[in-house]
Image (cartoon, rainbow, N blue to C red; front, side, top):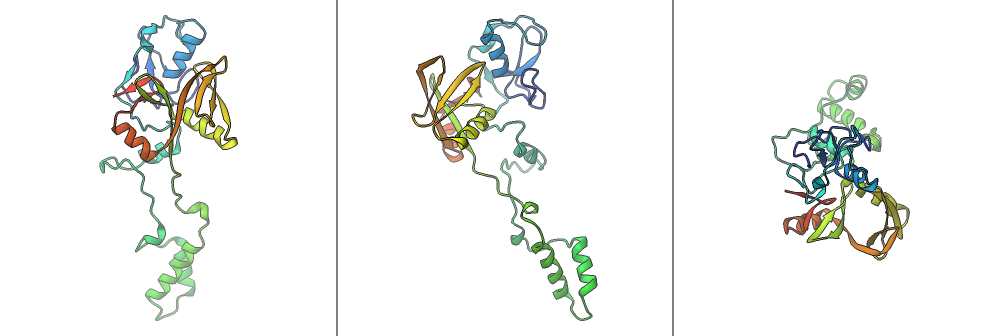
Amino acid sequence: MVSEDDDDDDECPVCFQKMILPTAVPGCGHKFCFLCIKGAAIREGETTCPTCRGDVSPSIFKMPVNRGAALDMHDPESPSVTLKLSRPTSSGDRHLKRINPAACNVEPPSKKSVAQINSSESPGEGASGIQKGLGDDVEGKSDSELPQEEPERFYWLYKGRGGWWRFDPRLEKDIEAGRAVTLDSTDLIICGYAYVLDFIKMVQYRKETPTRTREIKRVSGEEFKAMSDNGEVKGISGVRVA
């Protein structure tokens, strides 16, 4: 069954990355990414646990539900997750707010600024000397030292039974990477099967069955939120998120 605990810090024994939609095998309790255990159990035709070779009941893949995940979840490896967790959680604000240094009224002087003030300020300069030192320090910063705006986020969806389903965030990164190389199509391995995502027709299909297609869609964060609020997005990679 799909675990409801927040275990995305655990490493999946199949892909060796932090788990996405952690799923526990009922018999032995070993956990994997949902797509990893599904691919291992179905693709090879062996319904056994990849860790202990114990039995894996096919029932865990029938209408799975995860009550601890969010539809807009990030890839657990994403830097934005680390940034988000590093902030206090009491504010209730789930979005990072980048601060433009130019908009700040006061900035504590750095050691470099103090040294500039001590070496150049003459009696009577007072506050003007401090402002000059601080200005020199800010202007001397490279672009890499200044806060960077987070790029616009896009979501990838595929049409399934009863509505739209989101690709898991790690697959979304692979799709975006493929789209950056060519706007025609890209190949993906999902649950052990080779898939083609056609960006021109906006469909996906298994390479072995190209006539059986599913519609896909790329939406902005605003569009995704609207679709989620309307109940159009059912879950992630076949797992309902409640």
